[in-house]
Length: 111
Length: 110
Image 1: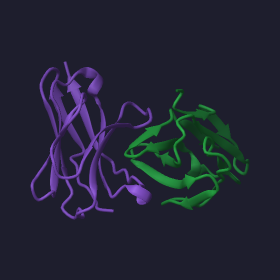
Image 2 (image 1 turned 60 degrees about the horizontal axis):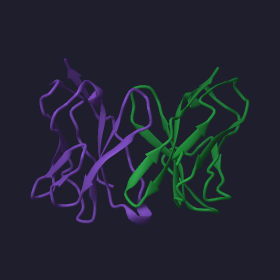
Image 3 (image 1 turned 135 degrees about the vertical axis):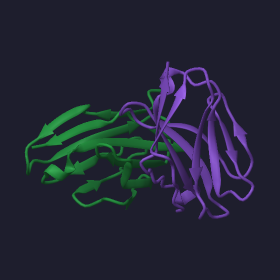
Image 4 (image 1 turned 90 degrees about the horizontal axis):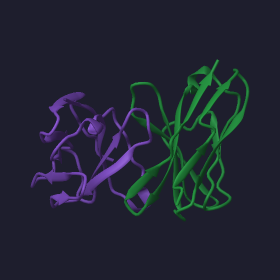
């Protein structure tokens, strides 16, 4: 599975958009980009995933560059409850689905 | 649905003791996973299973054993506990693309 690179920490003001970058320059053509988050030692929570196209759900938007070497997770209106570690993971899914969690990005949303 | 449940929530073991961490899911998922998370680190995969009777090693399987006799249950066995196994253990199952995690078991070996 491809490796990802994320900044160790970021800050965001409450109510503003949080943009979390992820570099995955060695991603393969069949690998998806997944985002999970972990709030204060709870089990990780799925946020969103995508292959090529940008994706949006009720939690966030995922923007994947055309060459697929990087992506950005966008939380449109961050709240204090969004303070968490955010993990960007690439995986081919299917029978080989074995998520590899790095250290992620600690997003701190400030009042 | 209760989702993924884990017991116990907390446990303190003495060096050399054994225990089983329980994991149950009620979503009829075939794929199940065990991870450990050390302080300040990401999750590391210990073992996983693609269905009843089928298990395979992950990144850090040494010191652990698993079995999968039913779709619902995926227990993790620690034999001869060591201080290096002090960690938080998460069980997870997957539905096509979304992994569902349990609340974790916080284990201390002293």
